[in-house]
Length: 280
Image 1 (cartoon, rainbow, N blue to C red):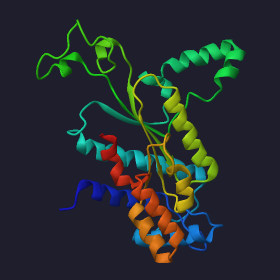
Image 2 (image 1 turned 90 degrees about the vertical axis):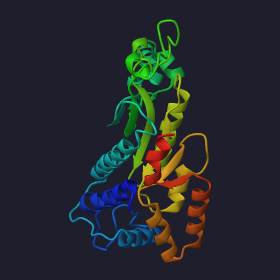
Image 3 (image 1 turned 90 degrees about the horizontal axis):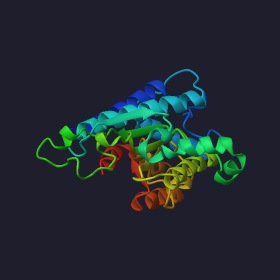
Image 4 (image 1 turned 120 degrees about the vertical axis):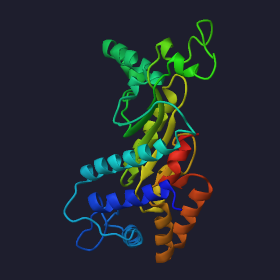
């Protein structure tokens, strides 16, 4: 029997074919770099393997990016809803919310206020530390009644500062930051790394998952964000199986080796892996 994640993955691809993927007059999909023979060849093969027909009509890069974010959010939310028995809680999936609205980063608002009053402080702190990730997943604090549902766990004498207790006055807890990159160029990969380092350095408390999702067909460009450790947890591809097979079909040994290196090093996974990784 086909699992829900497999079904959801197929639906994601159908939605992308219908509302996101376009081809130009040369048959090159819009997630490829039309100026690159390798990128165009891989993307064409992937489109064949997706076994669908791309949409008709122009689509700006900005619109494509927004649609990609929406589709990724829907996929993650629907899949995560099926595994709440693995990670219970009050979970919310949203787009483009400031990290300053979450418990681990609420102090950044005060820093911003101080920097506005004291220009010399702004110079020392630098700017752009209050970011808005493409997709955020967060957990709401729990009522004591819920925590004590099975047995007395908490009371007024202990656990008085944990953020998970709503009675302690804490805000929403950022669980994951998802950077959605329809395609990857050097500036876009660097942007994802900068956001990741911002989340790591400026937090107080629990570090959220920091991941990226992309449709980029070029292994070297995926590697620009996937290889290395210390910032992004992992990169997820919307169609990793099809990407691997497409590269094998065109016979690019260097690309195949690079993809294999990223996969075996746990730096690149399929989007269907992401919901369960977020449950960790």
